[in-house]
Length: 95
Image 1 (cartoon, rainbow, N blue to C red):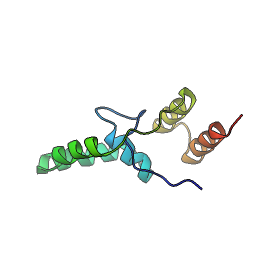
Image 2 (cartoon, rainbow, N blue to C red):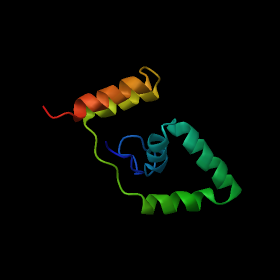
Image 3 (cartoon, rainbow, N blue to C red):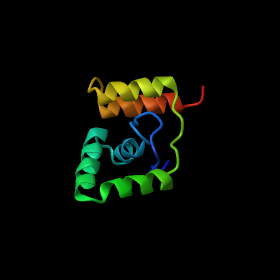
Image 4 (cartoon, one colour):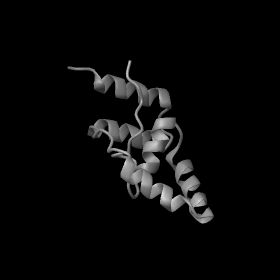
């Protein structure tokens, strides 16, 4: 059994991958995390928190093109979270 690890996303990133990594860790949409950081930035502490997380979080594992395409399809709502998990598991199995 593998444990989830909070990392920066290599595939779902706009600036540093922090929001994509947080979204992947908690299983939510990255747009919601980005909106949360924008609200936090307006309140005054969001930019500092983002920079600290950008420095503190390690890069996530690089993904294969097939996983990246599946994640993009999931982000567009074309496949479900279960389908994405099954694709990741299928691609993680040794050949």
